[in-house]
Length: 161
Image (cartoon, rainbow, N blue to C red; front, side, top):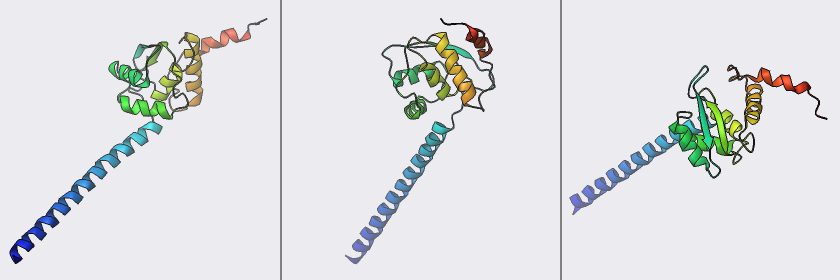
């Protein structure tokens, strides 16, 4: 009987130790994942550097953020659709994406893409240049790309009345 109690005690201790090890491993794994997502939500990077590849992207009238993220990932504009959904959720343009066709680039951050997609009701070129002006003046790090906004100053002197 004494050997049986010792054996059960050892088995019980081994099961508890294995359980603690598994819990610690899971906490470590998901803590790293949470840190990685948290870091990239606020430190956004484009898919490519330089001028990137320009892509014509269409947002449908009933498209959800999940659909937009899936479509952006399928054309190579973002690398992680779940991260994009988090970035959209925490952006000031949450839920403001409008239906339309937009010219997006792999050199844009997700925030810049969200800004452009939230620019106007119909997705016109005017809203895209306004969003490009915003992103160019709003972020010093990503203002290296020539967005062609110098042509927008030609019409500023016209008389509206």
